[in-house]
Amino acid sequence: MATSLTKIIEDMVDEYSNHDPLWVQFVMDHRKAIISRAGEQSIDLITANQYDRRLYEYLKKFNIPYGVLWIVLEINQMDNEMDFTNMSSILLPSMDHLQKLRAVFKNLYDFDSALL
Image 1 (cartoon, rainbow, N blue to C red):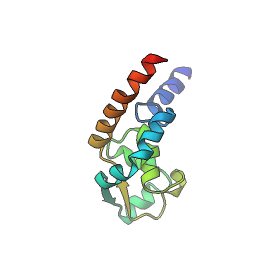
Image 2 (image 1 turned 45 degrees about the vertical axis):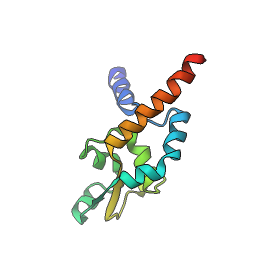
Image 3 (image 1 turned 180 degrees about the horizontal axis):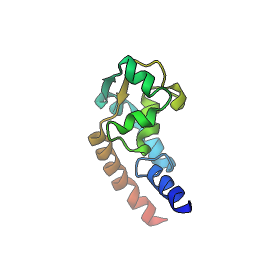
Image 4 (image 1 turned 120 degrees about the horizontal axis):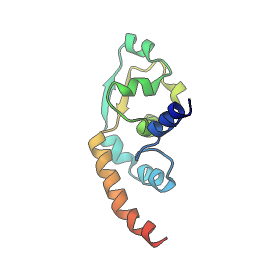
């Protein structure tokens, strides 16, 4: 059982996760740019009922990693997955844009971490 729990935790923590406060602040500083490049995905009634309060399950359909869940919540002004209910559309961030932001972040902060 420990192996499967370890796997679950590893799957939840990736380079986009909100475990690094510097990364979280960087994303918040670039929130408007993320929103401007996000795509609006319409949600039909059947899909809304199927994924009610299960945002991450819905995001899996679009190959969005778990670590991006908090960004999706933020750009859609949701507090948690329980807010994913009765929605007719949702903003999904561009993974290409997030990858570029992550690369810029690494370039900025790898130098600083080397000094610590």
